[in-house]
Image 1 (spheres, rainbow, N blue to C red):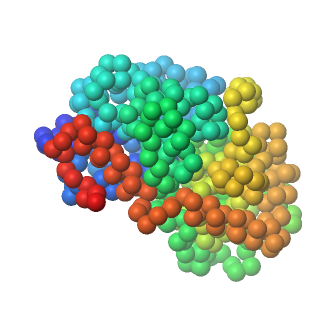
Image 2: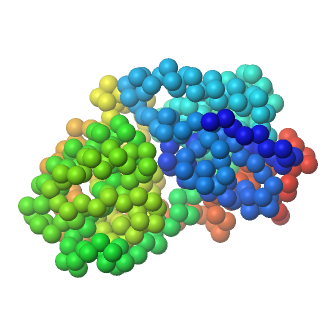
Image 3: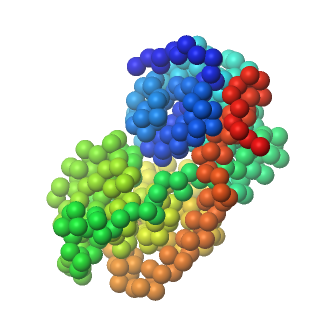
Length: 403
């Protein structure tokens, strides 16, 4: 699909999201920018269903970018290179007032490098500052050579980039705006005929095809083990459009009653109805924290990919909740520890031990406060920062109403 030119003098933002979590960030950003400018802003770029609903015409399906890991990426590399070149060409043709890459650095950084080399006057912004504190702090200098501005979701991130001369604004994490803690558990149970004595577990295998394929067999076997001690177990599997069919096929023969749901409202109702969760590492862990749902985190990558990552990584945990607390509050079972017996043991402990459940609930409350510091929604802070960058390069752009 070709991006449609809009005959308008309002600022044009070229947004690039590469996965569902970025699509959610982008949609909230778009809504905030429209509010701040009275609708005098245009959007083009790459996004998913949520950004499309806010008015984006995607250059190509975002699902093509939902990849992770070196060996998972290799088979798709020719198409990825083609899409990078196509995106750069479209940016150079449209000459937007700013390009905003939303996470997905494997794609967005490569696009930004090419745009910077071809047309240095186009402002480049990256939303969700790279986790240089987890990998190599020296990588901050590489971003400083490419971008004009970064938007950070964690309060301790800006200094890493500012000391390299790169402007970085802490905006908070817009996951706090999604309503993860507002689900209606009783209504969910009633809709699906779930008895008061049933034990509901939310099972979240991820939003990428690779992680879903790796995790679902282990999750299946975990429920098989738990069924022997919890015969009234019900699994609820929230999913997204990009992997819906794959997940639906995989859970068809699960050993316990299993419900598949899609969409944020149903997901958050499922969180409220559940007593515990088994989830792939990712943004969903923050949603589970906001929902105060005790969780076990699991993940698998290609072993060679992991070996390469371990030479670079500098942190003790993969879950952002644990990273922010600097302790293992939420169990992480990764790679060789991502085994059905260990997953069942940890998940069973959360189901059966009220003290273990309460310990997580109390711990994540602190993280929830950090994620959304202040009264201004994170998406509005992000939109203000982007529009301010545009205003620096385009003096007649619409005002944001900033004091």
